[in-house]
Length: 247
Image (cartoon, rainbow, N blue to C red):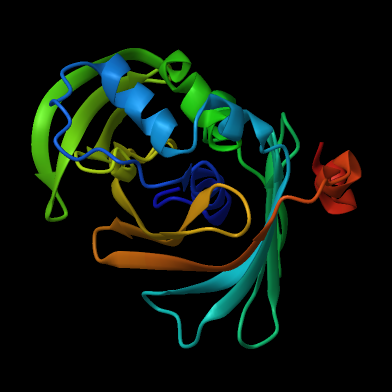
């Protein structure tokens, strides 16, 4: 992403399952470990996070430069994703990750992402990311409490294994992840802000149903309509023939 691509935003979205904790009058947190522990509890606990093994989602995309909303359907398993977008004019775009290859197919043909580190793509496709979060960082530090998009948040600052600056903001009151501010994982290093809002239940852990990314004057909003946890076959994530041909 010069700005975050759809698959990345999707997989980031899948990771944000949560329930609102009862945290009135809780003592302030003072460490990375305490913030992440509260976050995992807000998500429903370790067992709830680990239970999610397949996710199918549908919704709409709106944003800068779009004449009309597009619809999407996404599929995910641990370290595998498939994201399909249908524009208002009927044209389609697909992107995905099969565990080792990050690809996309549009009207111009197939392409393989050789710019974004594979570990970054794998992280974005980690359905249990809250359980593994520190393992993706060379360092992750507690920076106290700050305002993020008008909310008081615990601020964690990290540097990923692939050398990118990454800031995470967790709501002081609820413990939920409120948003990110980070350098894009591709070579551009563009600063991106992502917001997570409007959590609700679809019969499992809560999901942030509105996810908005901003980079410069560019904005994209993903509005989730349905989420299912029904099992998915691994074959869903097989590489398209056009992508195999590039390999």
